[in-house]
Length: 236
Image (cartoon, rainbow, N blue to C red; front, side, top):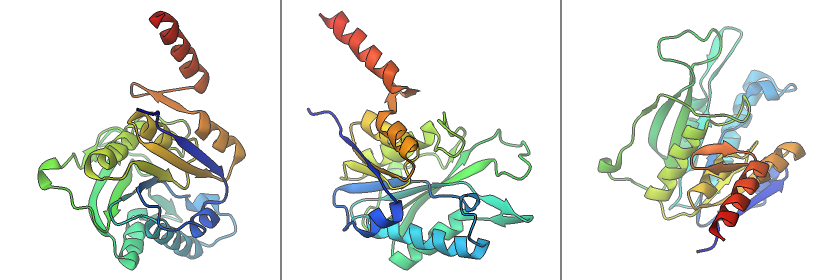
């Protein structure tokens, strides 16, 4: 059996997605940029951008695939910004059904986080996939898991998303058009799935190409290579 493949495109995600057809054989897992990353947009302009971009991602998923969004809400001038709602608006536009909505805890339940939500949304959409109720998984993940940076998707959340794709769809490639450091891609490879990432920042794209997950733990590329050599020498 060949090793799972990983391809990183150093490009603007929006332009890359617009240039793609429906990506047959693929499902998507991604976390889209926050309002804080758009200095020149008003809040309303960012909300429109966010919904339009979510719709674009959904439009490139085949009917037998799923799109899973990992999004943390925010606050602006004392008001709540519900990204789960914005993603659902996009899915209504594209005709995708919501399969599930999980809450991923970022802080201990019952604690106050003062301005930053203590949870993230993990939302799954599809046109054709309809999992059996007997295969249901927990609606609340008590831990997001290890992160490579503050905006990154937690390792355990990545595993939940990629394992659902592996077990509940026929697609065998995971696409993350806003891949950051590439934790989703590394987890997909660890589970035997191919992965495609898009990242605008060159340094982040390089990290996304190198990042490895081994036995459910994030390791550096150098450490992974050293472990591989040690294993090979031990087999001789």
